[in-house]
Image: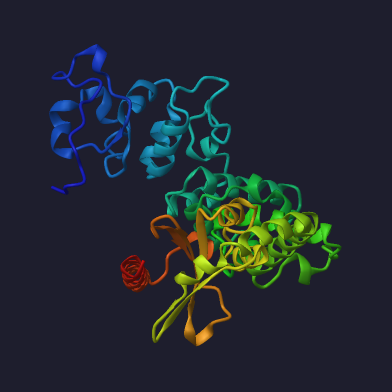
Length: 377
């Protein structure tokens, strides 16, 4: 017997009669227990057809008689849909029930509010509520005289990615085709679940930047993520430039205080055959470093002030093959030369083993120099 099927204490199981221990959670039914666990009234309820699916067993048992469409769905093989409905709704109060399902009916097609062809398509993919919403959307469009068709490939994609028509309302209005929308989504580097929000955000920024968002080249860029990120970077850059202009006087004052500790900070210069560690010298160097690596070192005067007080120092780790390109930013405490933190772009730590080994050698060189200085003194 497959190991994925676990025995579940049924609500009506005679060996689990404790009314305070009725379990309402998703689980698999273990087929080997069904002959003695199921009373006759349940054997034709559709619960046997639900066995391959993880679902809320006791919710099904409690509700199947008052909600006979659960049985229709289960026996039609729509086990995923039944499980999803039981999880999201389950008690079927008027204010809390799936409006996609017609309750008072003795027909599967009527329960799904679909014609025969679309009911068959739903069964083919063991569809979710989202798949049902898309098929109902397609049927409504047809009834309104719009010859909109959703290919089975697109339907399977939308079903798998859990994307609903209401999420796509604006994009559908623009594109006029579900298949075109899905093909556009598939070509992007944005997760389908985040796609709509990224696209809306991009359009908002593009419009604010003065772009003509009625132009298809603007509306549907080949690489949505890249164009979105470029606009974010441009807007952030403008904000940073405005902030820097405001703080020019403050930076000048801090630079004067930083200069007073530069001689001491020179001990942090280090290089080997591959890498170089360079102590920062001005506030603007921190701003440019943070801007290049997308982290917070230059976003305010926090680290600049610590340098001005001689508490800690910011160091720039570079690869000698490209010294102009920021790679890692390091903060070191000046009192005991302890490395407090070190991060690369977006606070990540690429090639961490190599960087850790390098920083170990770097600290050893500082400690050696400190011992020599103490002996001389």
